[in-house]
Amino acid sequence: MSSYQPSKHVMTFNIAGFQHHDGATVLCDLRPGMPLVLDPERDNPYDSNAMAIRYNDAMLGYVPKADNELLSTMFYYGHADAFEARVLQVDERAKPWEQVLVGIYITDAR
Image (cartoon, rainbow, N blue to C red; front, top):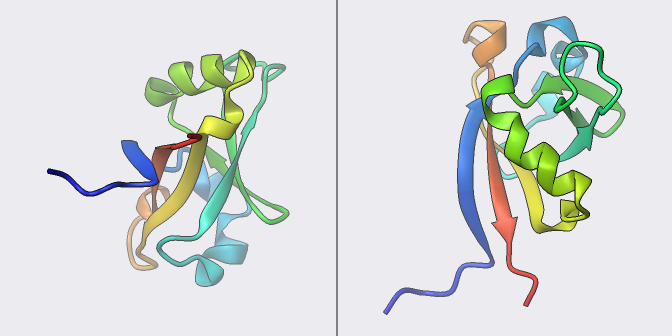
């Protein structure tokens, strides 16, 4: 019998565009397990499924385009509360676009 888990991991990725946004200003504050905010950008001129990732007031970058369609659709249909994003790993010595690893989880709403 498996033990109860309050959330289920569904995807892992590095933040797209991290080097082009505010990530460097908050990198030293990020720790594994910290929650991040997913923010759909339906009016994004490059990708109508764009999902911004924020920490406090800092724009960190985006869910990679290859991974954003399901999240965008679920948010559009009112299921944003079913998902949470968390920092999985921070590596200040990595290339900027590989410094923060993010996990997306589906939370148990029962």
